[in-house]
Amino acid sequence: MSGHSKWAGIKHKKAAQDAKRGKLFTKLIREITVAARDGGSSPDTNASLRTAIDRARDANMPLDNIDKAIKRGTGELPGVTYESCMFEGYGPGGTAILVDALTDNKNRASAEIRNIFSKRSGNLAGSGSVAWQFVKKGYILVDKSSISEEDLLNLAIEAGAEDVKSEGDNFEIITDPKDLELVKKVLKEKNLNLELAELTMLPNSTVKVEGQPAKQLLALIEALEAHDDVQHVYANFDIPDDILEEIAAEDN
Image (cartoon, rainbow, N blue to C red; front, side):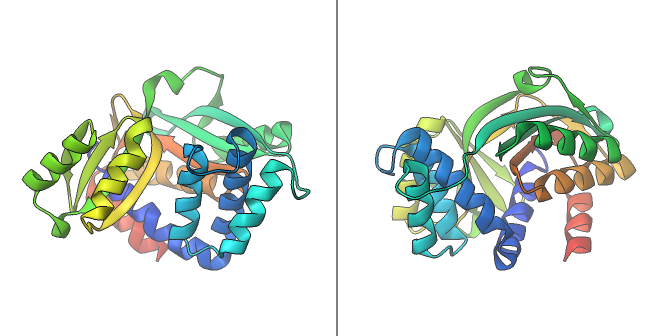
């Protein structure tokens, strides 16, 4: 998992910048709408909706926008119908990449995402080609200044977490998807600084990527994330922290 928490932290900070430009709001509204459509309007009984709402609140989205997105999902307000789809491919260094998208035109999205892959030293692959290399998990980043590793380990495991790891400036907490909200709730009740808390796809193993291929890979991932239909991008890379920091500095 080396490098994963660093990249997750970078993406979290970039999300705050994207929110200012409104692009993140568009993606979050789409996510809330689909979650409400598929699982109902109550975040108490719809975990996907609760997670999407939490992300929207973290991005300071107005409550009125959240409410309207939910109503579009339940049909109380008119709106576009989005289809959930997962694209699979390979990036520089032989990395496996999953692209989670919500689109109103799957054929268009497929063609555009294929084009992004091909222009940036990657290639789109068939369904099932790389998905087997990932597993869905709850993922939480806790600032190390908030708590000691021993105290966090005891607290998180008792709340239902599967694992706690030390990574750079943060602790990584891995949970079963159904336990994410409970673990997050327990940590928040202790006033811990959560850098990130989300459902994600974690790789079963990683591929070490360095030098120019690492920069090409991150450029590919950023191009995919910038696509309007793309909600999340997951990859099994292991990139040294110094390269991640260099890329982050270039983006600022």
